[in-house]
Length: 113
Length: 113
Image (cartoon, one colour):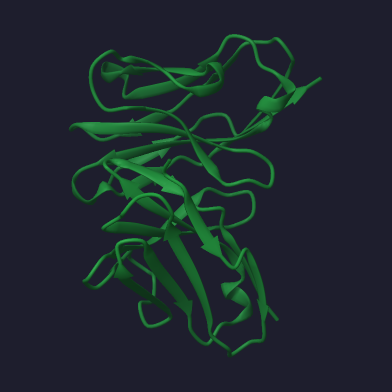
């Protein structure tokens, strides 16, 4: 149980385009999901908390207009990187809460050319 | 703000050796504590967690961790490692509302066959 999927697993896009990443809880419902960014050889940095049916809560320094989060259902949250630039290239990971435990998706590697 | 420290960035050891990874956190209140593992090319998986009760927690794959409240520590141990334990290990703490996790910097463990 407690499986979280992400799609796509990797994406390459041109600078200036937008990219949408999906995060799904496959066998449980999650009112709260989280989006992280992981730089090479570094730990996870929390970007935002995605709340079902309400606005996401962003961490300090994360641009909410740049990283749009939508949590329209209890099993799906999406992160859209708008007008992506090369510095947005990174590994994006989502997690979903089951009780007080977070379960993580496999991550999406984004490369912006 | 709470913080989590993992003192060892890299650990190299031989098969059958014992492993102990340190984790300290800074938060004076009630905490939930987690160890996650990230095998090469894979997503984060939950190794074990502590919420309350017996401070010695047993997890999957022979790992255990001990919560020492007076030392603000939650060290991970395995008596005899295998080559397949090669991975990056992350300590994480959840304190306060919102179930947000704060991660340590991670420890890369290389087990030589």
